[in-house]
Length: 409
Ligand SMILES: [Zn+2]
Image (cartoon, rainbow, N blue to C red; front, side):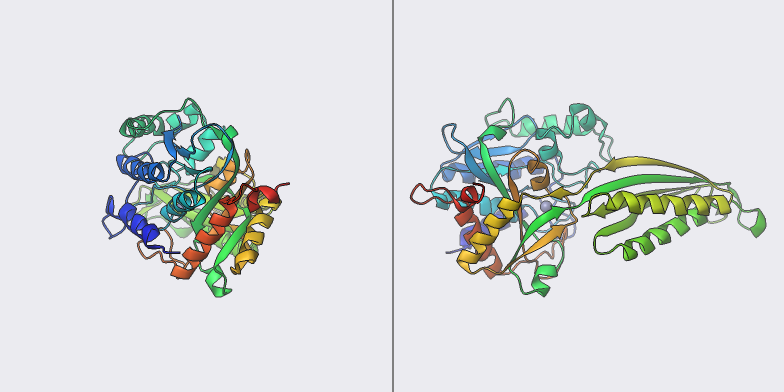
């Protein structure tokens, strides 16, 4: 199989809207995401599919008629200065596999997958599966203050040339498979080309606000200080310690810190932390959070600091469909592709689609573990392996059910 068309299309998407650091910048619900969707729609049309867009902004390229079909696809939005493979790899491979299957297979590209613009990701897939409402979207804002609902309306206008569906045609999807570049380098270390996800972690996100007292950095004795930042700092280090202790099933990260007045000569009066905890075992993230909050309360008490806390979001891990995992493994075995089971700590559209249709998430080994940066890299042979497996999963050359559908019987 020649992969020239696959690589050519990945480069075409990459070149659409260059970012400052030599990467690609196609923010969620932007004109750049719309341009990428239109390009994919044109390729799908060439493959005999009929492109259209649902009210949530997702691109559907389905075969003519109304028969159920196997779909594949990923996303085409990026983080600022993102790489060429995160999203486009799975999207371009889906178009290629659908075109090689000669009809009867569909492509689904989910909108606004990256969380970098609105602080919430997988917006398209969560909206179409009923996990995000229009009210939720109107409360999500980017740094310019624009809400996701308005951004989506502008994005849909930019897709004006495509037929608009009244609702997402999920009833036509018999099963779905998403291919994605791995976001660490675990598969390469094990000598594997592909990984099939058995579980996708559920993130629990929490905000903590420590309130002490602003005072003079020089004139306030140590015994009289109520330093909010010191209480927050203890909590940051506790999150690190708990994350180490609970590895590899659970991760804990403090990703944001805001202090007030943020002045070199003042003892910080308030410190706000944002915590992200992810677990692949049910209840794991919640248990780590409880332990972290307990430690944060003790640190606050000891320092005479007041602590307020609030949930930003919480979800449980998603178990992927066992029959779909088996179907992927069967296809890999048939083609002699080295594939192993894995878990994903990053969120993906396939985990939300899994709630409504049997879904699989397939990772292509990363060459270097780089993710969300221009250095993302995959080996030619692993892309070829992924395309072969995807074709087998989507094909039914003589009308017999595909491996994927048989796996579900
Ligand atoms: Zn992605």
